[in-house]
Structure formats: C-alpha cells, structure tokens
Image (cartoon, rainbow, N blue to C red; front, side):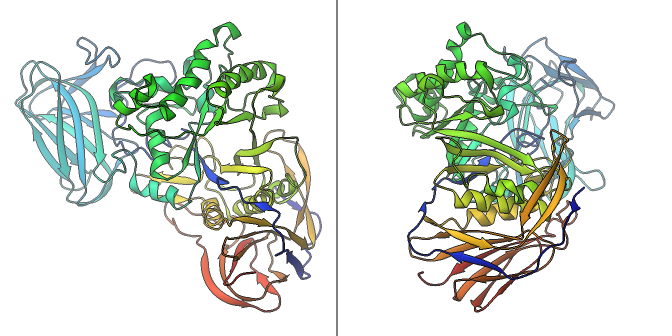
Length: 620
C-alpha cells in the first residue's frame, strides 16, 4: 500500500522545450511488442484455432496421463484414447467413439467457442471407421438455442481420410461447442480436428486481436519469450526447428504457464505475424540454458548451429538448405531478420561462455545482424570481445518506482552499450486488469526512454496477451475473451506513444514540485522510498518541424503547467476516474483518450493522473 509522506505541491510547473539543435535522432524502432506464449496468449488467444486438445496429444498437467480433456461424449457415446493405428509417427493418438445413432463427441474449445452470426467456419477433421457409420453430422451448437450451423460428412472408410467442411453460423453465441455425431452408430476414430473462422488474418490469427496489435504501430516483435524460451528443463526449452512443418506433426509441449501448447504458431508463423504488422522480427533463441539445467560446453554445437540455421531460414536465398525450407512453407522471399537475442534472463559465467560461443559464430557469418545480450543480475556478457550490440534490461515494479528513479534510469550512461528495454510493466499496486495509475507510471518511465534515445533503441511492454479466464500472470496488455477482447489502460499509453514518435529528440527541462511515497518491491519484498516529480515530460520534433510534447501528471490533483510554446496545438488526453480505474469484460471501454484543439496561451491544466500529448500545428 502506498503511503503519502508529504502533500503534493500545486504550484505551476514550468516545462521548457529547447527547439534549437536536436539532442539526437529518434530510434526508428523504439516502440515494439514482446510476445511470450503466456496465459493462453497464442492457443486460446491470437491464434484463431477454436478447438482445444485438437489432436489428442495433451496430457494431464505437466507429466500425467494422456487426456481427453475439453472433449465430452454426446448421445450415449463411450469414448477413449486409441493408438492402434496412428495417423503419423509424430501424431500417435486419436479418439475412439462407440455408440448408437446420434452418439459422438463435442469440443468446448477455450472456455467456449465464440461464434458470430454470418461468419463461415472452416472445419478440418481426420476420420476413419470400420463400418462407415453412415456418415457424420457436424454442428456448431449452443446450450439454449437452436443449432447454429450444420453439415454432413460422407465417405468415411476404414482408412484415415481428412475432410474439410464449411459451417455458416445463423446466430451469435459466445459459449458454443463443436459436435460430431455418427448417423448410424458404430465405431468412429477421430483425430486432427481444427476449426478456424474465415476472417482469420493470414488464415491463422484472430482479426480483432491483430487489429489491437496493429493499432500500437509496433516497429518490432520480440518472440517467443520470455521464460517460454528457456523452459523449466531443457526438454521443455523452445527449439524452433520443432515448430516447423505440418501443424499436425509438430511437437506439443508443456508450457511453464501451466498448459499444453500446440505450436500451431511456430517460428514461421511468428515471422508471418511480424510481417502482417509491418514490424521487424526479433527472435530470442535458447542459449543452452533452462531454468534448471545447462547444456555442457562440449554439447553446444547443436545450439550454435540452430542460431546459424534460423538466420539462414529468415534471410537465406532459396538455394540454401533452410531458405529452401522457408520457400517450401510458402514464403520464398526472405523475412529479413536483423535482430537476434541470445538467451533470455540468463546470467553468470555459464551464460557468458555460451553467449560468446554463439555470438562469435553468428557475427562471423552474419556481421550485420544486431545481437542482444541479457543483463540478468548485472551480467557482463561481452567477455573476450564478443559482439554485443544491445543490452536487454527488464523492469517489473510499482507505479511509484516507474514515476520515480526509473523515469531517470537512462539520463546517465549505463556502460558502453545501447539499451533494449525488453520487458517492463507495473505489476504491483495495481489491479488484475491494470489500472490508470499503473499506466501513468509507465508513461512517466516511457518519457524517460523517449528522452534518452541516444542510448535506448528498443522497448516493449510485457506481457502482451492473456486469455481472460487463464491469468497466471497479471496484469497483461490485452485480454481476449471468446467473443471479443478488452485492454489494460496501459494499452492506451502504448498506442499513444507509438503514434507520436517524431524524428528528432529535443531537450526538455521541467521545474516542478515533488512528493514522496513508500512502496514494497515485488521481488525483494523490501520497502523503497520514492521521490516523484509532479510533472514529467519528453519532446520530439518531426521532419516537417512540428513539435510533440508528452506531459505526465503523476499526482492525483490537477497540475498547472507553463510551457514556452504558444499557438494552436492538437491535444490528446488520457485519464480516468481514480487511480484504480480499469476496463473489465463487462465494461471494456471504461477508459478512453479524448482529442481537441486548443490555443496555448498561459498555463495549461493537466488532469489528475493523466498523459497529455501536445502537437504543434506549425514548425518550431
């Protein structure tokens, strides 16, 4: 709980923007996305697949028995897992359904399937039956409504055959299910069941969620994490080659965030998502370290080769081994990967040795690729002169610390490295779905990043997505539901910064009052005293001479600000009703920014806990 030590000072703050010589150019890639497969952010999130446990390869928990979870019997059916005739050597299990006419199985998806009236849904399913079962009825059903869509599959034989059917919904329902029923009864073997809406972007991604990402105007996408890169053990570590090829033959694997991942969005699909967003891919590769295990140095050749091969997959000509595999996957043109991060939150001597091994090999073959190293526990990962272009710093903390010392973290140089703030967010003293004060704290921190682009080159909020019904980590930026999504107030701040970048950084000084707080740190549980400036600011200028000033009111009272700018400006204001204001599944747009045009003459009043962006209408 925050304890105010002294009262906020309400005297007029003075913000002075130096419109003379620029401090430095802006970083063209400053604001981007960090995508970790956390809290069903892919399966059950942006990946548009509606069927859960779609190939019957999920287990109970991390290492239990294979399971039919998320599937239910219908029409007096009996069902079990079967491995007597696998559809492939990688996809070993299917469901065997027995029963009379009308018996079958149903899939509930990810907490229900969100079905929309008029939308077409493409079903793919592999079936076989020793008696043909007279055909199979397939339907989208709601619990208290007539059937939403129906079709029939015929031609089922005792050999595996893949069928494709399109279902057109006649009504909306957020909790529908997919049902397969035998017309005449008997035995039916089912595997590889998939259902996608016809409007899926690139045939893969939920349209509404891609739109939320595109609105952030990201310059890069860092993927696939995060702790997901390392895994708890090396068996569970992310190995990109195992996520390529036919989606039914990819490794399904346990995610440390407590669910099974299909890897339906694998390495190739992540690259496609970045391409859809017109953002640069930033791949984070395993460095031979998991949370619990480290690969011996004499076994590291495979990991070094993985790094070289991933770059060939992304950048190589189609006459190379991995460039040809990319082309075979439907993308002859290179993806042009220019950023490679080696490891995630790794540190110590073991990391430094493995980093150097991989960095030296990559730099020798791909000297133009920007290499990112970890700053976990202040590691100095450039031993023996290994190439290290960006240091990855992570910050998870309180609003007060974001507004306090972290807002000035990069005012003074931090060694000889440029900085990638790969993960940051307020995770303490906020609500499950974020809050206004948390977002404003992050805005203060982001002003500090924007002021210091001579050093800070990339930054990304984390985490990006969480299914609203699976939130192991909170808060997250965007919350998918079965029939839509809602956003953390931090999304608005991220969007506004991404939309107002400029081309040159201007020096800005702020004369303002301060207040003090005491907070408890998330990880150490120790207390911290924070001195916070009432008003914080950054400024940039566009190529055509317009000045953009960002002003943060960190207090819970209005603040008067005097600026050395005058004339007409566009004003955008993001604020809300109280420090804990946030959106919910039932009130998804509680907080929204508003825009007007004003004439700057005399002091400007900033709303409590607000981000205000002023854009001049003429050159300065």
